[in-house]
Image 1 (tube, rainbow, N blue to C red):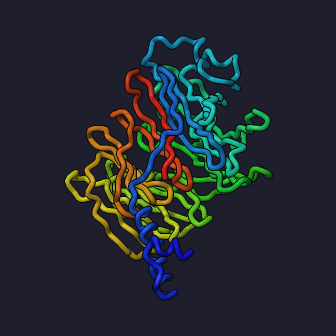
Image 2 (cartoon, helix red, strand yellow):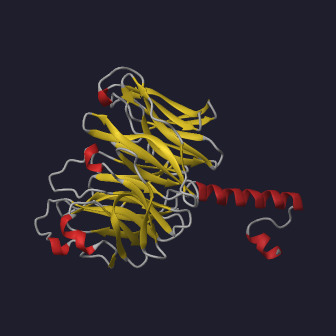
Image 3 (spheres, one colour):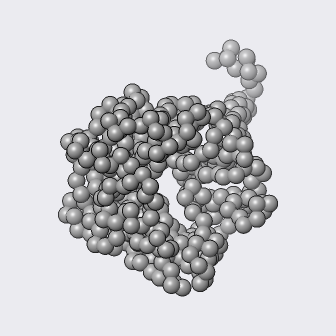
Length: 405
């Protein structure tokens, strides 16, 4: 021990001084680690010529990724008999494939062995807490190449669950009218989903939330549709915040036409407003806020009407603003990670960077300079999935899964 102490200059000191100096060394080491830029490692990538990739989600418990694959119609080389090409296994009903070429397909991709499974026709997959089941909105009616995705295209869509053990899908919720969308597991027994309707001419969106008990199949409303200024309040995304169900809500604040009017941007739990993000033109709050381990709300305030306005990272504790940091990085779009540890942004030149928000050190992600369509994090910020335009194939998306530490 004495020789080791001598090497670092501690021999001859009193024990208190030795302890102090050791503490300083440990502090310096932790500070060095704390000051590092994020490290990013590519885990997997996937693309299939002529297909868009939509609604990606990372598994909370396995090395899996679920997403929606949809034929783009921009690659004439795709033929009907090639619809399942590239899949390791397909559970799609074979008799329907020829008339459902342009339908969305729920896909399950294993990042460690690249196995791709085609599960069913539908949208917005969501993993159960143990990842043994995947919920999704089933696409009821076949789509055609020329179809615009208006509300009528979703009419009759229900909520289904694919069981990975039995390889079977089953319906768990039916629409009374209109359609259902975007399921979310509150826990292994309760599934939250949205009720959709026309909200702006032919366009559709979620207008309320229901919960279904997967054991009893009983359904209860989480929120009810509301209309202000002759417009629906729009249901956003569901979350678990401190084990409490919450959701974003966009409530009309004036009589402006459609999405051009002003909306109150709210985070709601039960009947409580957890946070009011203000009245502004309609902006999606997805990836713009996060709760950290100190139960602080981090809000990336960067969706301004004037591009030259400053961007800020605001930190709230309850209703009190605790910190306000200027974001100096120049970017076109940005997203916070699940716990607010990182911010990912893309520049006008399509360069992608990852920022550690504790020290604002950044790392450039080595991906092609292409447009970025989706950013999805896992629950503990150790993985992120990115969807880009393919660098060389028209009408084709590519998804990357990256490890972060």
